[in-house]
Length: 136
Image (cartoon, rainbow, N blue to C red; front, side, top):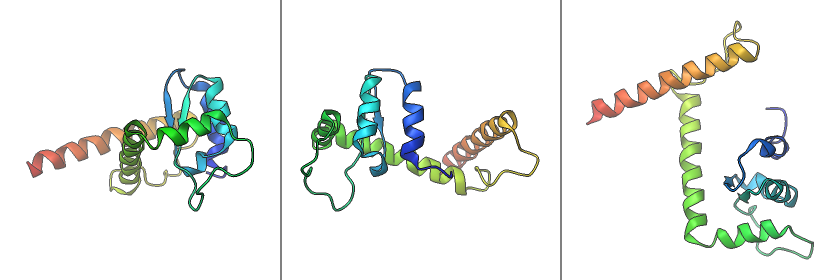
């Protein structure tokens, strides 16, 4: 991607269902994103940036402060833990032989890219399940 994740998140947040949690990495830890999520009735949870100990002397979104509190509770730990599993899955999707390697030249346009990604995910999940069966 040629755009920062937090900028893309700002555009995608309005498409989410209200009343849910959005878990991101520390790039999502900014007041603007917390407020954008809150407008959709979503609580953003993001770990604090490295090296940040306090909240500083600037105004912070109340939703950011709520996220900091949640991260100290079991629910916050559980949400971050589930995100790590998703990151691991995406990592596997991009590195496995049947995964999402670079697109071939003929896969251009939204429709072809969408179909390519869908097919690759199906193949990856089949490959993953076959490995689990073989290991059992």
